[in-house]
Image (cartoon, rainbow, N blue to C red; front, top):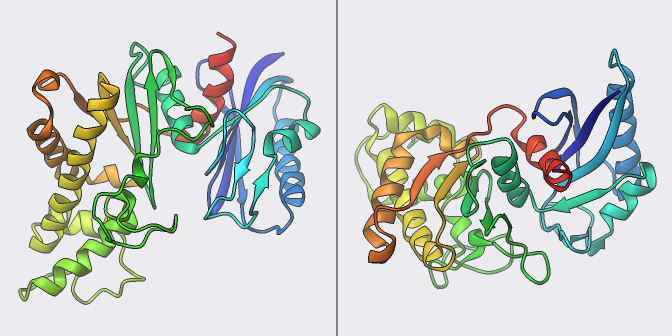
Length: 317
C-alpha cells in the first residue's frame, strides 16, 4: 500500500487537490469550483466525492497519512479560515475540524503562501535553506517566511502578510479594506491598474491603449513589454521597483538567504526579476548587501498542492 499525503489548495475560483507521495510525485489530481455552494459543508461533501473518485480509480491502494490545506486567511494554530475576502463563507470557518469529520487523519491548514514556502522547503529549491521567503504573485500578493527552519506563523497564525504592508499612504483601495497595500501595486491586478495610470500620462502609441480593462491581463502586458512597448516596460519597472523597495525592508527584519518569486506574474521573466534585484540591492542595509538572492521558485507543475501536501510530509520526517 502506497503512503500518500492529500494536498488541497482552496482558491477564490477553483479548488485543486492532489495525492502526493513522499518524493513529491502527484499520482492523482482533480479540481472543482470553490464558490458553487453557499454552505461550506456542501462544498466539503463535493470535494471528498471528487477525492474518493480519483482514489478509487487508482490501480493500487493508498494510505492517506494526512491532509494539508492551503487557503486564504487560514490559521495554522486554530485550523480555521477567518473571514476571507475572496470566499463566500464569512466569519470563522472550522475547516480542519470539518475535513477531519470526513477523513480521520491529521489535518494541517495554513494560508496559501505559507504552504508555498513549505513546498519550496520540502520539494523545491530551498531544501538546504533554513531562512528564506516566498512571494506569491498572482491576483494578489502572498508571502511565506521561513525562519530558523520553520514557517513563521506568529502568535495567531497570521504572520507574514507582506502584501498588506502599506507602501503608499492613502493609495489604491485594497480588498482588505485599507488603502495603499503592496498587493494593489505588485500583483496581476496591480499591473493592470498601473498600465492605465501610465497610459494617462503618456500620449504616444502603445499596443495596450485600446484594450478594455476587463480584457487586459498581466500576461498581455508582459508580452508587450518583451516586444518593446514603452508603457508595458515602464509598468514592469514601476512594479518591480516597489517590490524591491519593500523586500529591502523585510530583509532587515528576517535576514533571508534567498527570496523566491512564485506565481503567474513571474512568467514575465527578466523584465520583472532584473529590476527587483537591482532595486533590492540598492536599498539594502550595507550588512545585507551581496548576500540575498532573488530566485524563481523551484516548484513547477502541481505547485499549489505540492505546497499543501508538504505540510504533512514535513511533520512526518
